Length: 155
Length: 155
Length: 155
Length: 155
Image (cartoon, rainbow over all chains, first blue to last red; front, top):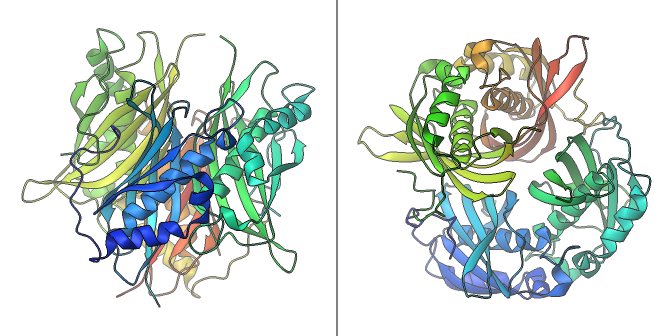
């Protein structure tokens, strides 16, 4: 599905036993993900996939998803992918991301998948892709992200 | 207001006499900008400013604007800034952007200002900042974007 | 070797039959690659790998390769990867790149591998990784790039 | 000179009284800056300017400076700009940067100027420009960087 991501990414251990629940709990508090109609499709150590149906009120002037919407999905997928490898008492913070638009973001549903590539003590580097479900069922890559996340520990 | 942008940016000529109207017309067709409650505050050759009030349904887990929201505002401000210098028969397309989160995006209202730095025949490079109105009236920079836009001409 | 790159990337057709020779010919004209001691290790449709031995005069203050060196290698690998899918009369131009430093760039030799992810008529999006040969022979990822290349055609 | 940078950037206090000397001392240990023939032209709180003459052995296939060279200069200027506001016992580390090529990097000499935009306890965000001296004495912007630096403290 996410052809831009490595098929054999580095293997990561969860940052705590409750890593799946932690992602769901935090995601539920992201009001903007509700506004977009996004939900969590998969959580595993080092990777999180979100899914979101197409909606006209999320588009730019040509009827494609606005780049801010694909960026929001990719950023949340990337951030929660990073969160799965973080310590139990930590929070995750987006420092920055870079987002390439590959193709018009048009399709019935969209998947955003984040994959951790490097997990340091403070800095976690993540790639994410956004794919669009085509009428024939295939997933087409529509956007690509390279993001830097931070593990914030209590002072 | 937008301290991250150059005070003496290069001067640009409008791409066509109707450049202001063109921005307003295209912006009205960005359904996602309506969804966010954003509007056009200023249009000048090489620069566009958008404004958006804070809303709770646009936030992440800590009550700050989601990074996808500041990215959406900055991308639209950057894209329309580029559009002001483009030829009458052209369309503007976001190729990519890079977005740094500087401070928690909290405040009564947010301004996103795009400023063209280099306008080539096809590629237009734009910086954008997002600022948040503080209780004392000051504008605080909360996010920074460096973006690459493309001028698409009819074949 | 380059675990950050997709194992099943999209398949690309060469832009012209002489695509391998074209990469070697252009690379030879990059004086800076000679200055770095880099050479072409592999050329295939959509991907190019460069190799460069460690040298002390390429380091920053801690004895690691300077980020500008890993960026130069990754940019050339990405640019030539894009070049393999471009038309015979075209030239390749770097529009922009984003470079994450993952680990200290230390090792006997470095490989930079570019992989095209999306080839449009004008814009080609490429990922690149830089890996360092470890004493045990393993390749460790030290840097990651997401780059935008342009196909420039004669006017 | 560096029109892409803010004319009224935020004001920063030096991170320690010896901030100028610290930049010079660390710069001298960057072997790659010597290899490029670069030197420090100016150090002030929150900003550092480097200068480098043109040399043919630093070029790509068209005789312009290789993008890795402008990226190296911009990264060092950005990193040392960040270093000026860091604590005495800290080291500076490049996390990532994004580099746009604006114009062919051709000219007698090049200036790279880094300007801190946001200095957090750990993360420092910096913009940098690279300009080329034109035959008429003007400085032309040839490249633009948005970079994320980290303040590394002893454990």
